[in-house]
Image (tube, rainbow, N blue to C red; front, side, top):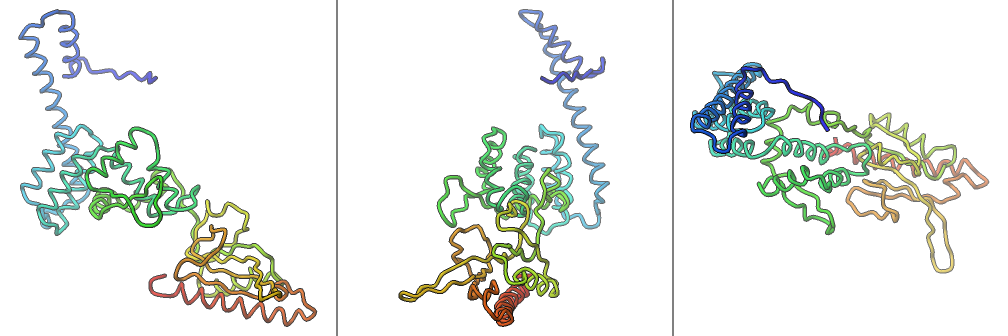
Length: 354
């Protein structure tokens, strides 16, 4: 229970209206004069709200540096913004109307689209906009505590809180979100933001407001490559050779243990992982260590399922140096690791992988 008490000024319109309501409540049939006074008191409240709202709006436009010489907003659009602003129940949305006015005035959108964004802002509550921002961040930035962007999104969209469910359905019903039907069918769906919602978010929020810390979350530590230390190699070359070669190519490298919860704390463009395998040929078998270059090391089978994933293998005795001539084993291991790093460097240096 909130024990906070708000004290109203004795001569405030709201205080006068409450006095009138108390007066009406003491009578079985209120007089016409009392009803008229109630209407007048209410009108006074609305007038004060409108005055304060317009003042905040004007000062906000001034503070954001409105450019009168480059103000591409028609009288109809500006009138629509002011009308929606004054009719809006939420004072805190004033800053959104200010930002939208500035952005629309700078844009080259046609008038119909500008009216569309004005109406959309009016129809969304502050809670809806907060939800959209959280969803945008969870869909674009890897957050600590979640194994993937999808898991972070589902933690939000699967919430049973009424206010969250209402905002989710509002965005869907307004055509700002649609269900992601790609991939396997899910019990709990993922969603795609429409271009219009992404644009609206960019209008309402500065880039600094679209980072995890702005909503109380933390971003994962990011690397170009994470090496997962599983099977220890001869002289630890699996770690040191790959790390040093990639680092010398200005590729950031993280090292984790295979049984760590690194997927909740760190992320990378590529993961390097190793595992034991046995190759059978008739009645004969040969043991290898297979080195994988993966987008996601979560799969137990480590099947290569995406373009850009590769695997390399080396005989087990060479990997561990468990042969009489360790120099030969070292040479064979270095050759295989060189193939791995050459591939990783080539892949990451492609234009689409800056």
